[in-house]
Length: 212
Ligand code: SAH
Image (cartoon, rainbow, N blue to C red):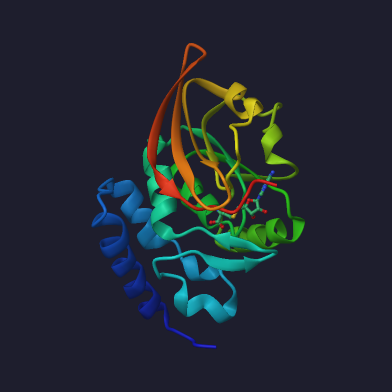
């Protein structure tokens, strides 16, 4: 296992922000600042920590992955997050994206289907001091009817179609990002809800693990 100092990780984070995020067109200072702050290496396996700031996803166990940094940046940028927002996240996974959200918005509800991953993510997020996150172990496709409606919904696993419950639980004027499509290539969609109508924009193409 390769061990690196706090300064080295800080250096790698700054490089990641410049080369992977800023250079690809994301200029929102709030987003750039949080990516520079959050210790992504804490969300991967010890043997992968030296790879945590590279430009690709990494395995986190249970056949799941922590998303590539740029994909997380692209998704949160598209949501136009506001400090007073309440956000629903489907697929806690490593908890990295949960931390990004919790830094920017007031309240994050996160759902994960695999208990072991959720427990691990919660432990890291607790140790980093996040207190505005609520964790749910269940099928995210159902959303959270009791906590709805949400300003923003972010889905980190791909499905063939968009779960209706999630659309229903979005506030009027709210936004959702979700990858949809087959196993190998998916469209990353941004949906905006207005008076029960949805405006759809394709942000790009991506490859996520499947919503199970
Ligand atoms: N943003 C996370 C992505 C993790 S991968 C990160 O960067 O770490 C996607 C996650 O979605 C996996 O942990 C998987 O277990 C979870 N998942 C898949 N289907 C789900 C469902 N129906 N409900 C909740 N979580 C689900």
